[in-house]
Length: 107
Ligand code: HEC
Image (tube, rainbow, N blue to C red; front, side, top):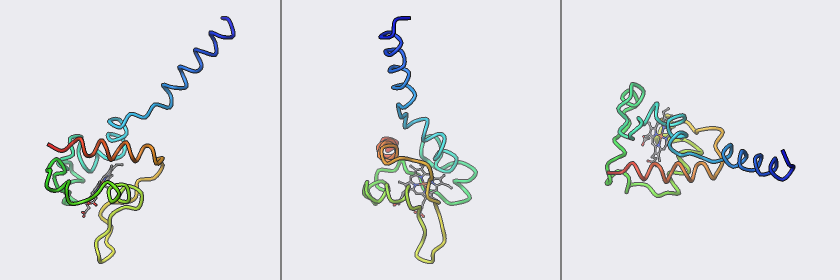
């Protein structure tokens, strides 16, 4: 292979390897609680009493900034009981993508 072709092949591989796919990140990090569709109808979701986040009214109750904070810092009630643990290992870009994805679950 000519060096220039090799470089092109490496570059395109790099792009695929780093492309962030919010749907699969959602499945990996969020769906076990929130459900694939965001309704929270999973075993863990039911145990934690997670609400149906496809509800537009519920989605209107928090800003994108608060959603980012929820993912980064977790959600606790005013007694300090943890509802949602911070999700580790996500970059700011990924978190932004997940918030957009979370919003897209709204019906
Ligand atoms: C361990 C279970 C669990 C996982 C995993 C989880 N969540 Fe949550 N999430 C919750 C619970 C419980 C609430 C409701 C908190 C409350 O209002 O009491 C919540 C609430 C939220 C909210 C609303 C925050 C607010 O301010 O009301 C957002 C946004 C959110 N989750 C996004 C995500 C995203 C994105 C992921 C994946 C990166 C994720 N969650 C993973 C349990 C989880």
